[in-house]
Length: 137
Image (cartoon, rainbow, N blue to C red; front, side, top):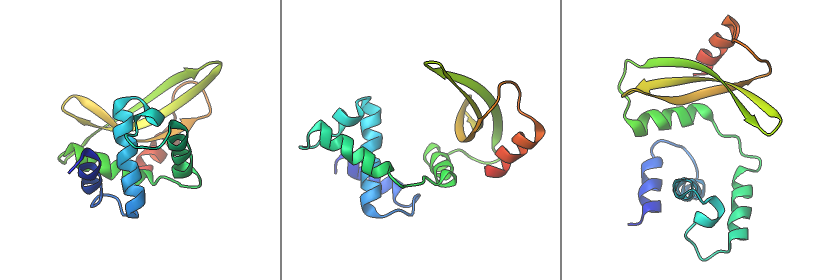
């Protein structure tokens, strides 16, 4: 059994998706691990075809972030009770600044990001924003 099948079979009980989506997600994650997304798919298809496959996967498909959070917790085998962390960070992409507010679960000294939101302002978060993030979790 190859890596794609192993990963797909691991994801299957955690995500209630159609088999083709699970298979694509397994291919996508393995490609990310290889750091060559469109080139990293080990298939007979050309790089351009793989790029179109990426576009089709994300077109009109809303990821359910609560499912992704459950997936991360299950794959990392994070036991309860959880230690939660909240962090606000700013990233720059050229002249554009992104203000990201995220909640993570701390496990073995590392906080795995579970849910996040984009803030439209600089500076600290307020109580409502913090409660919204925890509610989202």
